[in-house]
Image 1 (cartoon, rainbow, N blue to C red):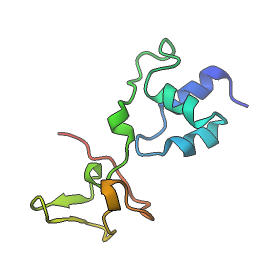
Image 2 (cartoon, helix red, strand yellow):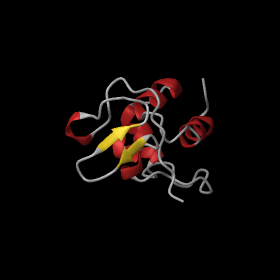
Image 3 (tube, rainbow, N blue to C red):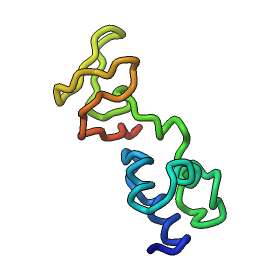
Length: 103
């Protein structure tokens, strides 16, 4: 069992693209507690040098993925061939989501 400090560190150092539910399961916390740690609503004073995520960064959409391409407003595609998600969320079945880094 991880100590609270180790648990917070594990949550904060988990990959950005990793789902909150998966992190929560891995460290033994609720989804809500994990989300609050990731966004800086809980344990703000622990590891202040580690940047917290914004809520926008945590919402996975195809448009934020590095494999997503846009030629025009109506012409978009995934370089890996996954169909885009309905309602502009995340494509089901995609295991290759990688958050696009802003240069």
